[in-house]
Length: 220
Image (tube, rainbow, N blue to C red; front, side, top):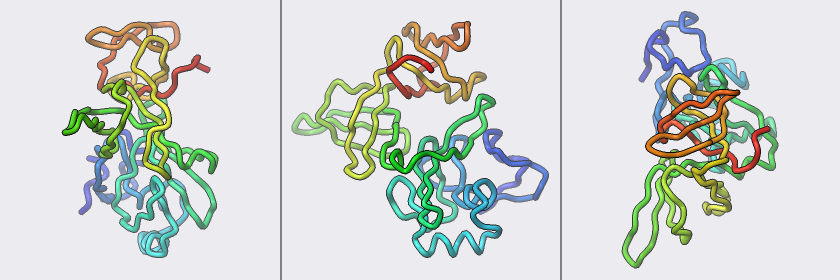
């Protein structure tokens, strides 16, 4: 299935009038926070010139997303997903610019197995087990009951286990992922119904759904 370029999400870093149609992605990520793998490989990284070439690369198992071989060119690659291209021996991730545009950013191969994930939901299961639901559609059973909705974990993609927890708390560093400040980095100064975030020299009230905790240290 395709959609008209004029109707594609504003976050997609592509010209709207270059062609009439563009591929419509599918997967757990919302379209405004993800890009179809075809678009990533052909239009942004430019590892292929045509859709046929992209399909060939994928059919050979040369592209891994979050440590899994993906062969579907319509697969949605979302925020902070880890992309590894065997042919290039290079790793990439999806990030946001300060103008709210998605960008494909190269990262070191050492980072390709570690991924920040926002905790979008939490459930207590039978036998007192805890399940957390992550922003990328993934569900995890965890032992750490102090992990709360709104915070983030660092996920080891090899073991599928959380290696660190980043609280939604005063002093935490966040990426704004929704609203007019999308793409800005800031530091939490206070939390009530909304999150007070210091961006530059000003403080803005932002909904908890629109912040993604990315670090617990000092803003660089």
